[in-house]
Amino acid sequence: MKLFEKNGHAIIWGDAIDALTTQIPDRSIDLVFADPPYNIGKNFNGRKDRWPSDEAYLSWSYQWLELCVSKLKPNGSLYVMTATQNMPFFDIFLRQRLNILSRIVWAYDSSGVQARNYFGSLYEPILFCVKNKNNYTFNSDDILVEARTGATRKLIDYRKPVPTMYNTKKVPGNVWHIPRVRYRMDEYENHPTQKPTALLDRIVRASSKPGDIVLDPFSGTFTTSYVAQVLGRDSIGIEIEEEYIKIGLRRVNIQEIYNGEALRREPRTYEQQDSSAQQQLKIFERRPQWNTTSHQ
Image (cartoon, rainbow, N blue to C red; front, top):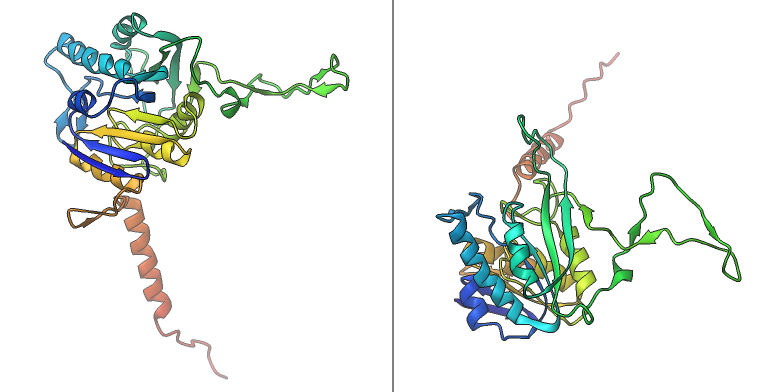
């Protein structure tokens, strides 16, 4: 296990359960966002996301969930994701320990055919839980969205001393339409299950305050830590894969060099092609321009 720290942000390279047990004090965290492996066979840099059985996966999950609950402050919040088939088990486990305030659906688009013989999955579930339903952070004014009514309305509230137009902003419901991270997006990193900054931005804004500590026990591309830093929160990110640790060190501005390697975003194939085309154009522009106009 190895720790990297700078300016209120910590990255722990190690196993999530070990790190939660030995590195994070109980009742010290304001907000936990947990996006664990889903046990569906994804390949994380050679590490297969597959347990011997569903029972083995749930047994492992209950261990780190219990630890996350113990790390929360009395007024802390937990957001947790998993595959749709596993979420009922997470839900039952957590409702015995926390107050589940929202069951969120993160709905997204698809660029290809999802399924031919059944309805393909275009969402992932998220639980929003708090330790104390009478004392928790929820910054509703920081996450308002435009009301989607199907029509543009300009309703006037005549009950006020001066008639005023109704506010068209509202707190989002529990269905969030946020695009998945695509290869050509600026935020894309080389990771199979990267979560978008827009998703974490809403969660961190809603359930933490500047200076709070945000914990992500399965950091991946460290989007949680990145968003926490942008919004003025402190962060702790745990990750077991060294290649993803390097992404985190770069995104959270903790190190520029790692074991003699300059930490840079991996170039996209289309960027390399564009660069090659620009070089070819520059070569062409440097060629002598012959005057082909005929003289009389």
